[in-house]
Image (cartoon, rainbow, N blue to C red; front, side, top):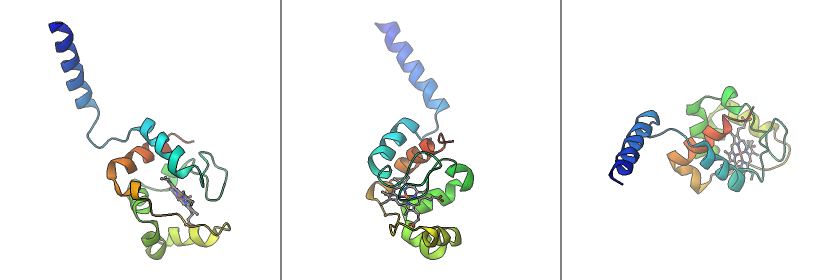
Amino acid sequence: MKIYVKISVLSFAFWGLLVPAHAGDMVKGKAIFDRLCFHCHKPSYDEKFAPGLAGITERRDMKWLHSFLQNPSKMIKHDEYAQNLKESNTYNLTMPTLPEMQDEQAREDVIAYLGTLK
Ligand code: HEC
């Protein structure tokens, strides 16, 4: 029992070192995507009611992704890429400002998942 406790404390400390506090969790990110994003976005290159999100972490950097997920309407006003995206969208939908995306860790998680879409 004592040994077991020691091992679990040690492995916890080990993972703590490997995984930085803000690293995105792609499993949680997939759950967020399936619940909040899948209505409009496909996890591939194909459009649904919005652009397919495969390859997005190569097209856009982390800073842009955080800003856009947190406040898309502000980005559509001030960022040229976001503006073009809005103008080329033929479905008459707008990327919504989602309460869940105000949380930095939730954005990290969903971005980590988006990074797996190739
Ligand atoms: C109601 C539909 C809808 C939902 C729900 C939605 N989006 Fe969007 N999203 C859009 C639209 C439409 C665009 C294109 C920009 C515009 O016209 O507003 C977009 C654009 C994007 C882009 C930029 C795509 C590119 O090719 O540059 C990203 C990244 C994105 N959304 C991520 C997400 C994530 C992550 C979620 C879930 C947390 C989500 N979206 C939920 C409609 C939606």
